[in-house]
Length: 110
Image 1 (cartoon, one colour):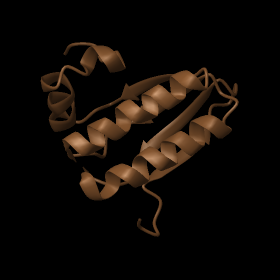
Image 2 (spheres, helix red, strand yellow):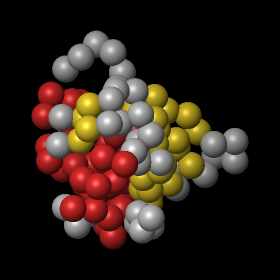
Image 3 (cartoon, helix red, strand yellow):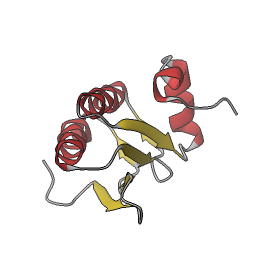
């Protein structure tokens, strides 16, 4: 596990949404466990009702990291939160769509 945070968090002004921004460009097998752990801790500790995960800075995502996102989504649902993915970069959007996860994450077609 790295010593630098790969996700930063802030709560919306109204307290409804926990905004999470990924701080690394490549989400791969090396980052997947840290990502899953960070997101799961955040959703279980949050009183928010929604987790909004900003993927704008991510230029690569592999199957392990996609699995981490699915695990985080499941943890969010168990904690009563909805999870949305926002601003996925074109390669990340393509990976999500090719794997059939676009509907799971509610990504609108472009």
